[in-house]
Picture 1 (cartoon, rainbow, N blue to C red):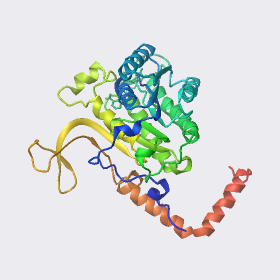
Picture 2 (picture 1 turned 90 degrees about the vertical axis):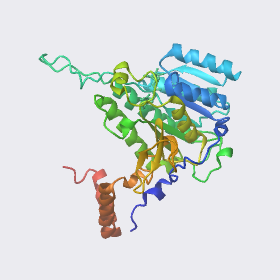
Picture 3 (picture 1 turned 60 degrees about the vertical axis):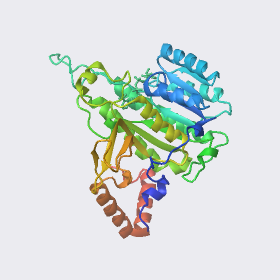
Picture 4 (picture 1 turned 45 degrees about the vertical axis):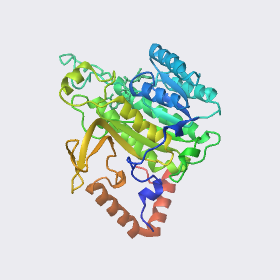
Length: 362
Ligand SMILES: NC(=O)c1ccc[n+]([C@@H]2O[C@H](COP(=O)([O-])OP(=O)(O)OC[C@H]3O[C@@H](n4cnc5c(N)ncnc54)[C@H](O)[C@@H]3O)[C@@H](O)[C@H]2O)c1
């Protein structure tokens, strides 16, 4: 019995070569649904993609901002290919309606890309507990989890319903020709640097964004089944309304990234249909040099061999075997499976069937 070959099973693409330019025009004629598209990155994406000839359906809870953005972009492009639909991502039916409306508005009756972008941050009840003297612990407000985790799960679930049904699309593959792959099946998730590292004072936000990372890693492992490609953006702190005054005070003296760099990285994912199952971190633009041990060092602009970038690929060698522990445990489990062979597999199958019939349950 052979061991599981993660990368081959996932059929994901190799690390993203950021030195190779993509063509933003590859998004032309795509139909893109974005949640939380009325502000921040979302609004940046909407402007960029509408100006490149896509149809964009914006689902957001903020009607005022959403309507204003659509008016502005329609004026800019002279086309009515941007639409606003009120949507609260925490409400299942509201998202069902958003997707149905997007399909109705789509010139070809399908959706090429879904961007699960809506998100919130804010005061965390675990960091500032109230009612500590109350007889009963007060119920915490888990709104951040509702929007950033449950809302994203709903969006991903609906994306997996609609994307494989996209008329004219074929299962995604890393050898596709992006210039000719207008009909796509792409889910782009918005993680955060808080998907990869702890975020002090924001445990709920950190938990939700780690969940988005888990969702990404799990979905891409079966992406070959529905032919949906799944990618992830992990921005560092970027100057948008989500960054509260308190956060700005805490971050003072550090460097914040720019919306345009997030839009650039997201557009690469949406435009380039050869990218499957990859993640990009976006931060402030810096000048770097790679050292002999592979680590990056901050250097001045005139250093020989310097590169300027705001985008990195974390763990570009793939997250199936992200660190020594994973690699070790996966190898051991594969060895156990190999040593048990087909007889072990057959025994487990019989046990599973019996269990399904109600035998052997405690
Ligand atoms: N700006 C950053 O520093 C940063 C860093 C990492 C990740 N992110 C993530 O990027 C995404 C976009 O954030 P942003 O920085 O553009 O923030 P933003 O506040 O400018 O935009 C978020 C949008 O989501 C919408 N929204 C909030 N709750 C909603 C709901 N229940 N239903 C529908 N829409 C809702 C808001 O109305 C807003 O338009 C979020 O998922 C955020 O967590 C942001």
